[in-house]
Amino acid sequence: AQSVSQHNHHVILSEAASLELGCNYSYGGTVNLFWYVQYPGQHLQLLLKYFSGDPLVKGIKGFEAEFIKSKFSFNLRKPSVQWSDTAEYFCAVIGSSNTGKLIFGQGTTLQVKP
Amino acid sequence: GAGVSQSPRYKVAKRGQDVALRCDPISGHVSLFWYQQALGQGPEFLTYFQNEAQLDKSGLPSDRFFAERPEGSVSTLKIQRTQQEDSAVYLCASSLGTGPDTQYFGPGTRLTVL
Image (cartoon, rainbow over all chains, first blue to last red; front, side, top):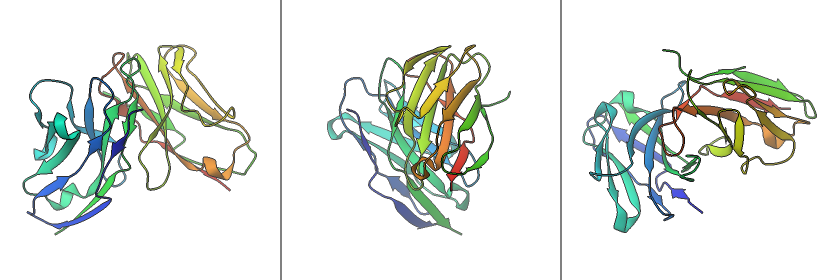
């Protein structure tokens, strides 16, 4: 069965610091990967996704992620974080190509200090 | 355009009561998903609809949980004889197509069972 592991549960950074959040997934055939973000008081929204092609994926608000098949990883990065990036971040993988259901990691809480 | 909406946003139930949670997906979206999110965890898949057909209910934790989407649009998740362990945020998501696709999430219903 597919599974997702996020290594960092709680990350605290100062503004302008660089960010990298780890995500590893278990292998299960064709891989479709996502990063979702949940800002305080808001609903889950898509940051970026990888379906195929260029393994370096760019998303909204300056975020990017790199799919490394050999490492079963899909780490999220941002060169310089802002206070407004304070949120919870979830990595997810498609758990069934038939239905498209998502398997989520347990999430990483990012706190950016101004 | 309107996103996914859910009602009620908050529900408090006494143990043993039945509850019904509603989801209005984005108009025209074929796929609809329900997830359960416990405190401090990532969302976990409950069930999937393709139009009015419930194609996957493997994530429903017990036979007290029942979902329907009779006309292929609005969906209702019903929990009978609620238990304290049912306390969680229940998320609904929809996607335009079937299979791997971007899912758009609603704000969730926070259920508290006393």
